Image (cartoon, rainbow, N blue to C red; front, side):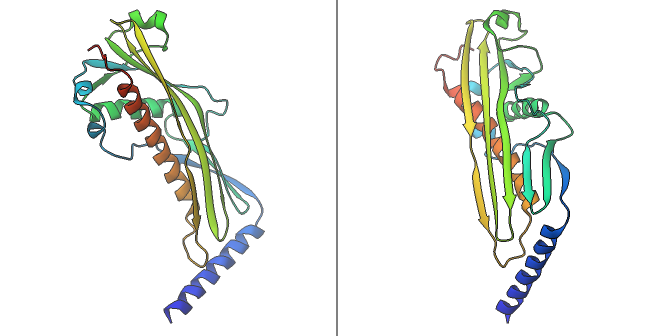
Length: 222
């Protein structure tokens, strides 16, 4: 009896999807509010790093041409453009790095730095972090039997030590690939699934950038 009900629900969902495929093409926007998702930052960084004095987190720079979009998801004739909101992509990354370091026991402060060695002596703290979003694009497609998502995030992180006149640069690239099958089920929440994938991937990029950056030098020069 339960199997029959499941088949009926699956058939109903299939009819809904078939109707959607027959509708006129439409394009909508969905805003994504970035937030950190993952292990506690304090558990990821060495205690010696957490004893840092104030560290500047300079505003990130978005190097992409399409700065206003995370990517496009297509579901039948519906095209969903995922956009940042309410802050820009660069502002969101800057905030997440500050929150990550703060939750790790460090003291991030606002400040200016362009990631170059010649401007390092002018920063108003001993340490500074600067980041560039080199690539961030996602694409997805939903069908009545599966959802398939792809994406790439590439971030360049720079850590400057004013007193040592030294810059460490690390590049992190995260490439998620998720495919879900849902034939004869009523789970067609593709749009929210794509948004969740984007948030989790951004969090992973931040996490891997920070841990890789602070592991890259044994002479941290506090």
